[in-house]
Length: 255
Image (cartoon, rainbow, N blue to C red; front, side, top):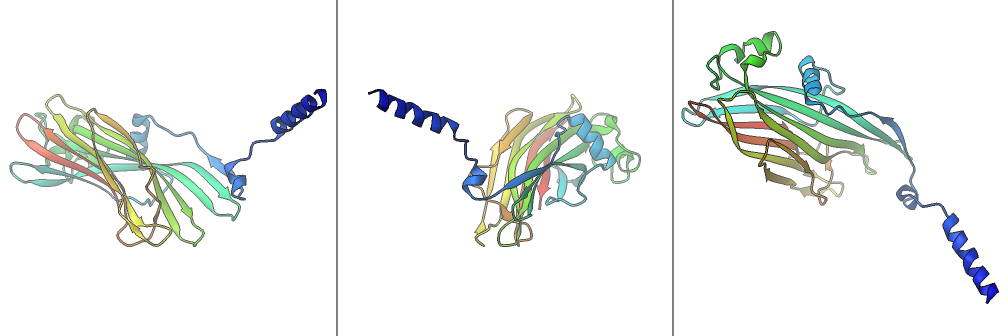
């Protein structure tokens, strides 16, 4: 009996002494974190960086466009946007490929005139103060913003891929005359996957408050960076109403 008890205790001690096996070890791969950076989440700081053109990437997978349309007159106008990107993490794999994680934050500024009404002209038009001499907070009625969290890496087939992981964002009314309703946030990550099959990946979410934080569905796959018909990023839409008119607004942050 004592001998059996001793054998059980010895076996238990052996199990406890075994070091846990990591996921990378199970897959016979090694990886090393070669860069990590504390993310800036303060929107005011990010906005100042975007205004100054401070970014770690001159080119991203996204093409930012913001549009404004008067629902009554059908008048359309482009809305000024600013973008900044942070590099958050880089991991080097055993085959010397590097996987990098970024956060790209974009802002769109909807203009107003001196009476507080949304406008496509005045101090914030195509030649206005925001274009020529920097940010003028007195000329803004609504600010929309989003941050896209994404990763790029090189797969075993040699191709470069983008992976959309999460999108956060929101709207802020800078003037009491303007209301924001019918807010929608959309995630987009359609393209060719590593198995060379085209996979449409898109989802729209109704936003009840002023902000949203939406992870990509777990079933979504990374898409080929240079593949045809790639749509990668996010979309925000809303209805803006002042004391005079109703406007349709969209911030497209994808390509």
